Length: 369
Image (cartoon, rainbow, N blue to C red):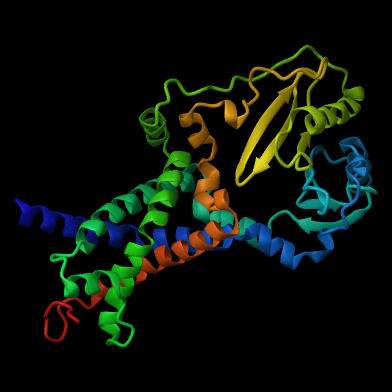
């Protein structure tokens, strides 16, 4: 029975790897670029960093709206994104470009194409450039297959004997060995060291992509009924006065509601008279809080997220899922760990294919040290 299990496990590992190899490679290699997206953007766009000033000098959303309206007359303006006191704010609007403005003066600093290198990488990572409907499903199930590969891989990696030779074969890369042996170690040993990060990335990816998996994890971590966000409607509020109301909502969030990074806020402009004002705050380590305000009285609507500290453990884990997926949850150190983990994950289909392609060649003996 034990031998049969090992044979079936090895067979599954081989064929699941061959079927999903290219997809896993693309998902992993694009993930490497996404991990350090913000840091690379800051490095490549120094003009978007500005000298910090007193917080009361920040211009409200309506003033930055005017800059966008002057630059792109007639275009619908969706929202203003504030990025703290030392970065330019950016404006989301119905155009192929994104506007960056000085949040203290309203001056237009730059117009950047909406679709850049990082958005291209993100599309590849989330949909393989196949469109959201089909591509998202393909990525989600490819991630599930990769999760199974990790489980079968740990069985194949497990040392037959916990003696010196067995430990060396499982934990050490023989850098001076011939290429065939080195390639085997790069697959087997590096795959083990990346295992924990790979499990976290795969599991959090499935939570975002597979509803049945997400509900299962929520239930296993103590959650009962997952909250459903109902569409929020309010008593009509005159559109001609909505921008000033958004300013008041933005100020209220900064001074009364925000817990973390109170100057990092997204403020939206409602399209309809019965639409609430959407704001996003408490953006920290890949976590954020969605708020919906009634423009008539600036009260938070029931569809607003609770503070993360007020959520049960299952809710906190679910809220932190994105931060866990991209490595933002622990700052630069975990981002670096995730970058290396993603790089190793991208290498596994390559080294695994080489092992399969060259199986049984030459002496046909098992790879030994």
